[in-house]
Structure formats: C-alpha cells, structure tokens
Length: 55
Image (cartoon, rainbow, N blue to C red; front, side, top):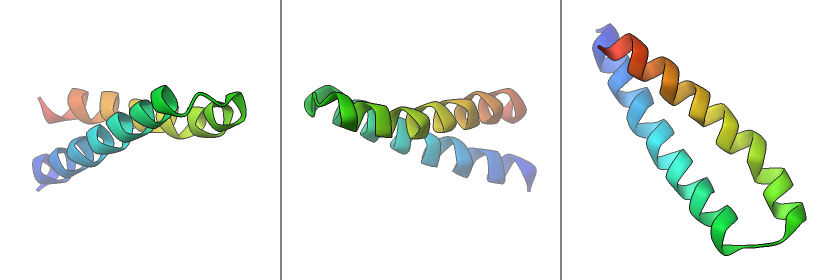
C-alpha cells in the first residue's frame, strides 16, 4: 500500500516538475518565474522523498 502511494506521488510530482519547469523556460517574465519557483521547489522535494521511500 505504501509503495502504491509513493508511486502515485512520484508520478504527480514528475508531471508538476516538468510542467512548471517548461513554463518557467517558455515564459521568461521574472515575476512569473518568482511565482512558479516555490511550486517547482516543493514538488522537487516531494519527488526526492518519494524516490527515497519507494526503493
């Protein structure tokens, strides 16, 4: 059950990280990047935790 939870959280964090990263890359406004950075950072931490717990 725990492995299923971490698999889903890993998938969601991957989607969020790739989407926010691409958006920050394409939309080059500093104000937008500042707004998206905490989201990108949070899902990066969730991804790291999920990978460590999954294995």
